Length: 173
Image (cartoon, rainbow, N blue to C red; front, side, top):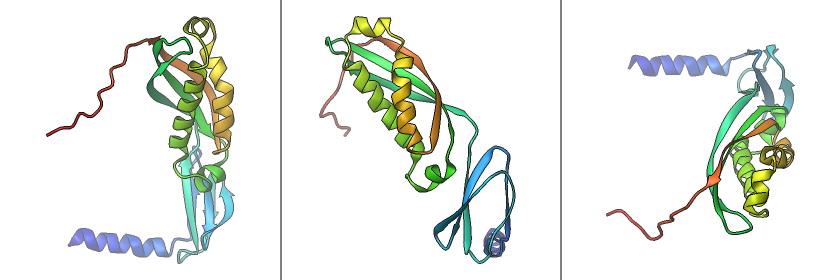
């Protein structure tokens, strides 16, 4: 019972919220009656209460993501496993927050597509000799920019020959 009373009190206070503080490691946007109003930099900002202004904020400092290994086949038919690590940060909080749903997942899936496109278009021996990270970085960075994300570096975490076994039609009983 007490927890419901506390929840009600917190909701009541949020209705009358007139300010927000954005931390140094964050960026944010304000929506006024559902439309973009302004971008918030770190610091103190006034808001209209009664949910006229709503804000969204996100961590904008650099972070990394280990993209799960992909099993791919090179142009000469050799099966390989490739894993990458993305080092990125949010460069445009407005795009990141308002123009794409789950921008980080889109970035990860786009990077997998770039990796697959490059791996399948070269022979294994060519891939071993090239700087694979430098080959895939420009394409991933360009795609990420569309979502307000700045990819700063791409590293190869795994690249090896691998046999894959795909089980089809297996179901648990």
